Length: 471
Ligand SMILES: Cc1ncc(COP(=O)(O)O)c(C=O)c1O
Image 1 (cartoon, helix red, strand yellow):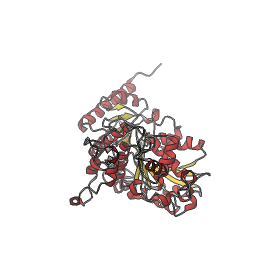
Image 2 (cartoon, helix red, strand yellow):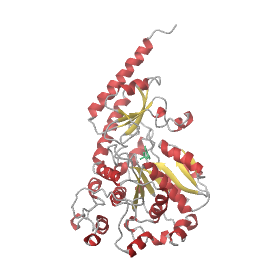
Image 3 (cartoon, helix red, strand yellow):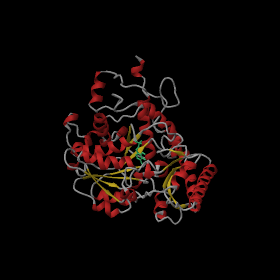
Image 4 (cartoon, helix red, strand yellow):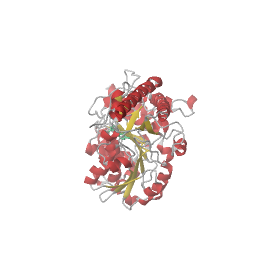
């Protein structure tokens, strides 16, 4: 029965030695995005990561099945909790972020929900509270402000730029801080290190959504984050073909420092044969106590599973992540500068522009740029928005970001339409705010498309001004 004795790609990847003695220098992200986490090892010698389209896995013998279920031996059980294709994605994103381990999920929304619900699970029954940025992706605001309230989980929203507000919102029951490394759509960039220091002084873990920055531009663990989440749907996949999410655990947060706050990790857990997670899992093979709890409890119970086909789409995208993000970032800044000069534009929200109030902080935290999403306000009446968007030829009207295609959206009537006026104002969104996500197309073509749409706006505005007053 050779299939029982030949090492699986999983086993080979786990036991693989570091790339080679001759390459003791740390490899760059552009190299790791193609190679990390996968050692071709199936008998068919596939160079690309195979899609393991299998619901379940045959155990080598009785003892293996027993030990794998008991969590004392790593291994595949059932694809709701883990799959070999997804495992390559987990190792790759973990490598790019510089974490201790990762968990792939069916969407970015699932990554946010599972990361926070696992902190609640770790804290055990009782009243629990989070402090979160008030400048979040709309779906995350819905989850934290509505569905979490239904579950009795309390959330205080604060201005992410006001570090003292984070400190002031802490309660005895606070079990996490949540923020985005770059806020969408007006590019709010919080001082991650200062906020993490406030959290850690109160023994609170910091969860950072790094979707907008990607590990190419920012690695939150280097600035004090404990857990990073991604909507892999965006830049990691990059081609608008698959929804996916990833949680990466930095392994930095010491749950044993205040064990009474995290009884499900630091005390025997009856559901899992009395295992004490912080004793049983030392992070080897990516099995940190937090991630094992997330996989064995949150994902097992709630089922927000990623399909291996979608995982393979995301892996394909990641192979060109660095190339895309660098080009898209450069083009976005060029186009932001172009728009900033135009009289049809009232304001460009891009801290990469000289003179932007956060230019200094942002240049220190994100020296390689802010990615490809930014917003601007058209000058004049809100009616001009329709003319502008409908005149664009290359930019697709799509509620997504991070695609190879350039995209445009009007947040007030789409992505942020459920916010009231005050909520929109908090998020920095006006009625003439337009969000762009710049793709990989030729920058001159994109500039020409924006220019002709702005000319259409200018013509429409002039015609409206010249129109005879109604009698
Ligand atoms: C910053 C951010 N986080 C999370 C999500 C949710 O991700 P998904 O759409 O993959 O569920 C999104 C989606 O737009 C996002 O922009």
